[in-house]
Image (cartoon, rainbow, N blue to C red; front, side, top):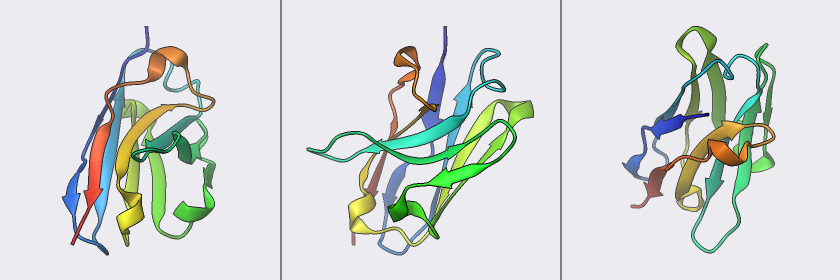
Length: 115
């Protein structure tokens, strides 16, 4: 059973920064590539960034240059550092494996970017 718990969301002004964390249970963490996804109101869930077990990263075009994904395999934790936040970054952010595990979707963490 996979358990992923996201945290670190909140209300932030445009241009601000937030760091999201995702704690994973079980031994799957070091095996899978992990990613951050987001779902904005009325939109489909989309992949924001991914990171392999070895640390290779990839980003959606909208995230390049602003977001940084990282992982600490010893702590079973993956992070998403987000800078220069925009209004359109408002969404619920989730972590999961890449590709996602159906059992891996947690509650997510709400990020609201507002003046």
